[in-house]
Length: 319
Image 1 (cartoon, rainbow, N blue to C red):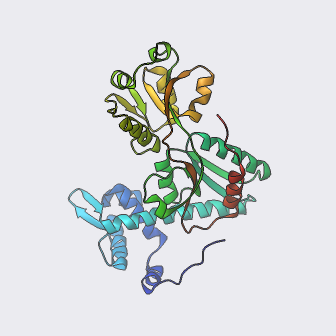
Image 2: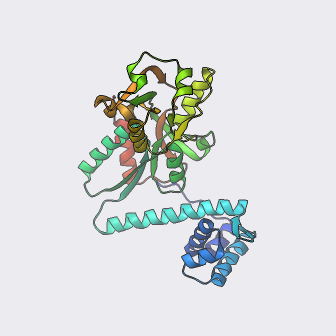
Image 3: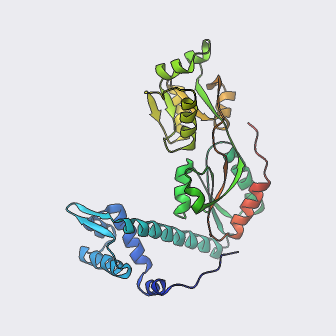
């Protein structure tokens, strides 16, 4: 059921008559280029035409949206907010066209799902397999990334739903969240690594001696391991490799002597095949739960409702 549309204010009604999608596309392009000449070239229009369009939008809102500087333009605080709206509206239009095109060609709608690596991925993959079996023509796009990037894509309406972890307290004011499960982090090294073949070392010594392979600072996994160190009065390592790609981390840990911190569910297959070894005695339970994240107030398509129903009924996959 779609939420009811509130009656527009006089200001909003005025914008209906003045603001068009081409204005939003221009703003998004200018926000990316931050240069009037380059933006005009990208849009295949003259710079005076672009300047006139920008003036139309600024007149409609009654304020400056970009600050002119010697080497280009930068968005004002109000401009930053409008750029967020422009990206969201354009992504929403793109998704609508994609969905309508699929239906016009005899398809059965479209669904874009984002998911973090770990046991959450196992549940989502199982759910998608079930849905595709029942509706072979349903278009599904699945993206896997860190929680912070998935939330950003969800806010930009590039995703219908994210199965991830909330990152900041402010996320709860913008998104609905239903917890589904949790993972734990482990420390792992390549097969044959000195830490895997010798007696267990003290964590302080491991931190000082070895390079650490870690997820980005904004990720829940990185925050959890840093809290784990802080709780034990340990300083974080000075030698690190920061990597946002899970697949790259799994390759790097096999090619170097680095100590990797990652979800136990993610590395299970590599442990079973003997490619990497988990260091015993170091398990981190401090990860926040992963769950269903939806934009507050968004309408739920039939495809999304079906996906959520299947996902909620699925049992966590044991590693």
